[in-house]
Image (cartoon, rainbow, N blue to C red; front, side, top):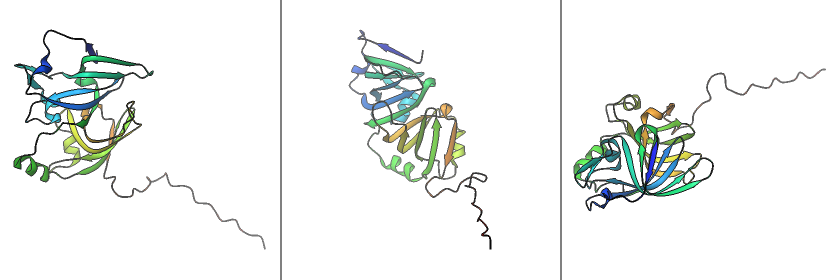
Length: 210
């Protein structure tokens, strides 16, 4: 199963007062879910998605992304509400953050951000095309990030086409599942020339008879 819905349980892990809520939209190939993800106070959303988090002494989020207050959108137009849902990480295309995904920036975190250089890129994750900025380290290229070990990659200033069933298409931050990417085109900031062989054919001038 890609996702599992559930009702109230005796152990409500999300009652841990140390957890921070993050308003997100999680997109899979067969379902789009909006709801609340969770992180610990010093975690980013990306860290919680990648490594999981601790709630009421239990570590969660190893293979599934847990959500609460869920509204699921299905391809044929149906919707379903649920108290909670668990989404298999392997089936996730991307997780879009609406708010609450970043802890307060410390001096060390701000320094790390300065050390990374933004690279404009366009990613194709069927059926979505995602445009935004990715952040290789100063000594890396985007290719090195794509070939890395992390399952989820960070992207900012994101525009998604077509828009999601929620009606949204623009997000400040999105975590992309690297294994769901079909292809990547980078450096789209400047004008791009048509590929050789795709130029429009030139019209031949007609000779005027004398």
